[in-house]
Image 1 (cartoon, rainbow, N blue to C red):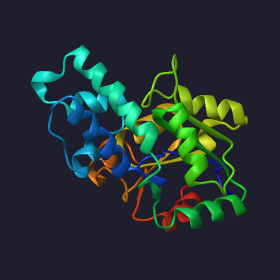
Image 2: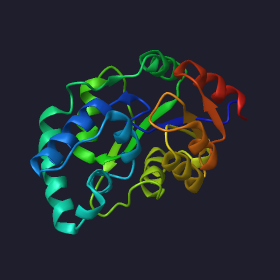
Image 3: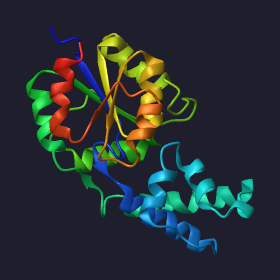
Length: 221
């Protein structure tokens, strides 16, 4: 008998390749403040802990004071709100995976550290065909991942024990979140971070592509 009834996805680097739009907004914000930008590979390291942390890491070390970070965050939010759907797209194989999971009867949810309005809009725009039981981003008063509060909120709302969730994500933060919640952590190797990071932070399985995930769900219990 399959031990899992639900799948919880990270968004950026897992379901959707969002790095182009994130990098464009981040570099636009840095330019507006008079600082140099970065390539997309750098933004793959910066993402994961929310926009405040991203801007702090993107700024030169000598310019990470609270006022400059706040200005950068405001500017990036403005730019990303306008242009967050330009380059963002599902990774190859994700539509087929979602079709398969829906057909097999899994409940599906998305939890991201991206602000909640952006998370909901992007999922609705780029993954409109599929029904997710919950879509949650960062919200005031709810700690960001790796704190498990948001994913445990999803489990409670669906009435499904955490142990019956598999979590698919591309970062150590996602693996830590799943472990803290008592869920099964699966690392996506097509995303923004490395296999070593995923292993070091507790991945129970690593997969090369979305096509491999159903096999993990069947074979992990």
